[in-house]
Image 1 (cartoon, rainbow, N blue to C red):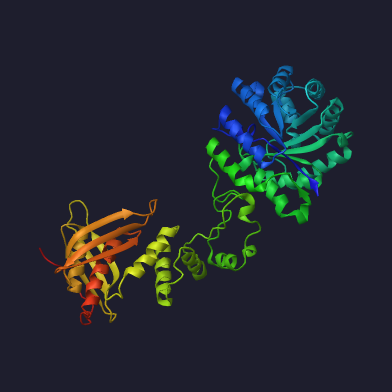
Image 2: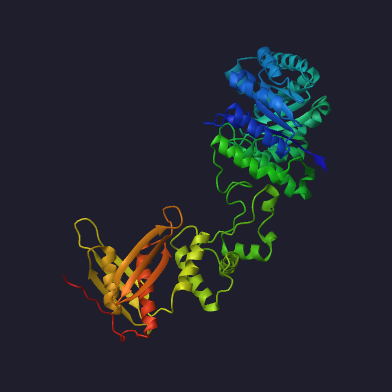
Length: 520
């Protein structure tokens, strides 16, 4: 297989992301990790931009080994000199000279004719060549430059000594077909192109940076410039992890390889995200939180039976943990049973499993993401409950400033009859428990009532535990739910049911739906 050179420009173009500013220590951390990742060249910065950037490039060049270190420079002698000074300690220094070539840049930004562009470019390359053997030249906005003039510039800088020609799609304007054809034509029609490496640097303004990079590889480019997590100016650059894993996963199509140690991708991504403050979107390819997560019941069932049904890469190959099957309302029985086994509850009976799955589905309709603690709480509720004499059908609380708390409770009995009660209390929980007392005719004295959150977020699961004295018999109830009122009612019923079961008390005779209100 042919090998593609990976040039990482996270420390230079990536730092141009609005709001990002890395200090010397942070740049060094990232540079050392990029070396561990196995990139071929690190573009460490723009030394003339500031003393801080110069010092950072110098530190990277002095300390980071076994990788090429590149510094950016305009076609000004002072820029090239500053870059060369910063790169003195590098094992493989490379100066990167750039100059805009498109008509729109020549007229409106540079206000220079084609002849002046050619002169500035070749003079700067020759000057850089006096400091280092490796010189890269970028005709900025190449994808909007007239093809004939672009070839003329490339031929001139190669003749001046450039060893790498980088073709930037500076504003992310090109389409994959256009960009691939541009690269192919340059290789075929540019004199001396065989003397230089052809590189590409694609921006993501239209979301095509990775596609354009891959199209250029198909067309013959042998170096790709990219950033971790796709960060960079405006909409960012081609994402290193996406380019690399596309080549790695589709070797059958591209027939190219890289020197990237893919198992270091996640570590590098997280480091860059942490130090830049740019969070990775959850559905981001390769490194997003959901990249190897399957929530559909159909997908989860397929993954459990055979991973390759819905995964074309292994999470381990990019340094992630195992595949995640987050439970939610779309999850099926197979995924739920699998999670129970992983949590150590594979011993549930068929009836217990049925009840647990029903409780899970009910909770999933109310809660976006089901956490392991939620599943455990469901199981604990079922295992701790005696066969219920009374089941909670519904509960409604009326309370608030200037109102009297009223609880309306609806219970189903063992014989499937339903009874309702509405009771006034000193507070909503007091009214709730009084309603249950009246329906069940098992009055209790509340000794302890505790509520605590067991998961985080606005839809957190809350645990309610109660201790109740039923005429000298103390019973405890504990229930977890994201609805604290419901959990309170069920916890109290849990304790009531233990008394009802022990005394073999029969449910009250079946009644038609009734409604009574205790007066005070």
